Image (cartoon, rainbow, N blue to C red; front, side):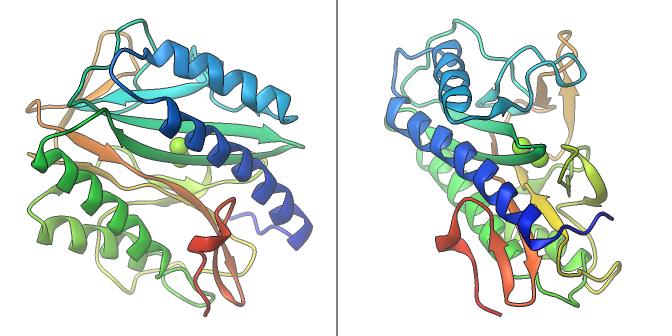
Length: 253
Ligand code: MG
Ligand code: MG
């Protein structure tokens, strides 16, 4: 695990502020008729004009700035020319490299009016992220994060994806430790100030299984059910969790 100095975390806060400005712009643009490629072009322009570099573009060969994951796609959907349709839900994941450090965050958006089950899936997934953030404290257990997500999700009758997990983040997009969205509470390692974690519940309405499309990226629910994804990058501090780029979600220790 790589611990960051305060100055490094401040740079990561700026990287994540760019990410969240992209997600805010996506929120304003998402509506029936818009394509995910249009969202991707907007995102790349906004990131570059903010002094950053798209963090996912060409990462292990990924071809775009955003991951755009519609309906039964869990994560890693590739932007394309399909127009969004009223009732869709679309997960948008964005990474930014800024002054040598990464930001990484995601939200799932409703396209127009969506069905009640889709609305509830998004609400539960976002709430599980907020509950997970509350587990981030100096001296706390890493596994309390995933335990909090799993408890909230399963209590609502939904399931947690096992194949993808959150991660440490810093000068590399993916660092140790892995941050599963499931597991028993009270297991190590202990969280230390300076650790930065990308916490990212991926939640299916049906069974937890997944399958990957022939493009090698697009991960879908095995049973075709809807899936939602929310993510924050969170620094462990002596004063509690610091949600990078979204200070209003930080929690006092
Ligand atoms: Mg992400
Ligand atoms: Mg991530």
